[in-house]
Length: 249
Image (cartoon, rainbow, N blue to C red; front, side, top):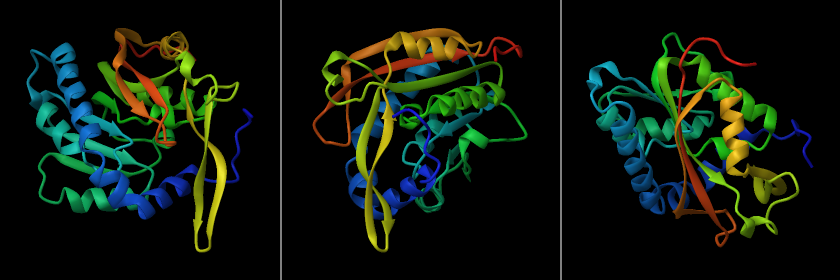
């Protein structure tokens, strides 16, 4: 199945997931995940901003969730805004970071995102591979382009296909899982929640938007576990630069 299903809102699904599993999945078991992304952020700074004062850098974290990583991004880069389409996640992020400096949270769908100023860096916190529909992935990249300064960077750490996934993904590269769609009463449905593409396909998606890729590496020693709790997926790290205002539609 590749046709987009608008009947069930992914915003609604993720909001329910945060409400039901906040302590178990997004607080207790995510310290290693956050540490990994923090190390990636430090590498990004060394590659892209090694000689730049942090006062000149502003960051947008896409898919910030409850804001576990956001204060670390602010420490590394400077002023950081976290955006997430889950109202509940943003409310928790604000509580968790009430005393943190240099950060701000916005409850907005990044696919419809607008902000009065442009960013030096857009940091994808594992959001891109959670977008199952190709047209929405294109919109994600367009919004990244539109919200970056000229010379700004899009940095992603995203799931990438390997042959071990052939029996787990469908023919379109979609990963399906049974997800909660209602709390009262409890209702679960099978839906696609990840799209895992080959490295060259991801490269083409980024290049077709007009970005110049400055870093592109599959981290074969770095894995992420799918929601089934056992399937291991390789991660691809990408840094792409917006070189001009001329984008390819």
